[in-house]
Length: 514
Ligand code: HEM
Image (cartoon, rainbow, N blue to C red; front, side, top):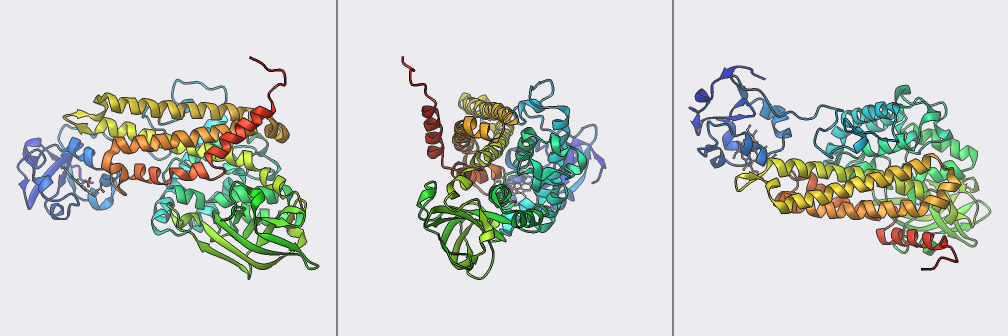
């Protein structure tokens, strides 16, 4: 990058086609050759307020900062304006954002929290660096080409034991080196997991994030908690090493939240179970090696772990997010499954499936709130840098009102989530099931409802850019298109709200009267 110095007067002499310079944030760009290829056209650059002038405001009203960081555009810089200093810097890798409300309160300088320790903060720093350095570049590529997340990313997640940590605190962490020894396995708590979930969802690549082990997150716990030792240990070792993949195959075209209505049938024979049926919307199904499958039986329901084999077919379903998630339609055609692959008891399938729901929904809520916060940051930046009628967008009361609603929603969701997380840290599994199923259902419903309101508001703030892939509003478009996934996966909003109220009704004292 050239540091040759020019005066503003020298720059102002280059204003024509074939001899065209501009200043952006103290840097001088020679656009003479590029102008004809400029995606925004030549004429806008020849405007008398742009050509040869300081075009910083105009530039940032129309381009994301990352345009300037691309090597092909950095090459256009021929020097700097003498006496001026660069004002606008991208956030450094792993650093916190200085934009208000872009980070949860506990990360803001000067703020306090009863929940997080210095150890959590060290863990957060490591996680942010990890996701931004090792995952983000792959996420951008895979979202585009639709291929599954790269093996190198899974290897890195296995090396740091992120795959294991995603299953939450517990004996499966014993003897493992977590983030290079940053946390002792016995000290790893739900706040560590919350941090990991929130750091891993700070970028908009919703399909990719599900591709990155969404199936394992929900499909492995039933194997871990109900599998027979030999089968369980083999699969756990392969999956936590990032070599093999699991998916949870419960939902069918016939039955979603109504899991009792499943049609996929497991027949008991002398040789083992014989499974026939279909499954739909199975995350990671296209590339999973193991399928944790809910089946009907003579006795009610059973959950089986089925290895990929002849008779198991997976087809990609085109959803509104990227195929990198591996969303599948699955058919099982007389697939023979050994009895040792039974998870729990025949007839207890529903209990096996339900056993992980609280943790799964809580984890999804962590992610959903974190992505929502990123959209708040995008809107705050855009509303202050975009000029309309000569003033920033924030000078409009209606925009400020939208921002106020967005900020309040994300802050309240995070505060509620942290309270629930604290309860989880102090309750055993049974107590969590008794006390928190309703709370978690409500917080997920609240987070995903508010997420959709924020997505809609963000589109209004960004206008046409909010519905355009690429460019200034690219995160808004992506978020608005993919935000319903959070509200459907792990239980649709209305189902969760209903569950929460039914749980409350069960606890209503008989003698409660107005
Ligand atoms: C270093 C100088 C510049 C570079 C490298 C550059 C590059 C680009 C690129 C890559 C795009 C495609 C959209 C995107 O990726 O965001 C674009 C669009 C555009 N640029 Fe530039 N540009 C420069 C300066 C300017 C300036 C000074 C103006 C001032 C008017 C301008 C006006 C536009 C417009 C109007 C669009 C279309 C925006 C849209 O579709 O919403 N560009 N530019």
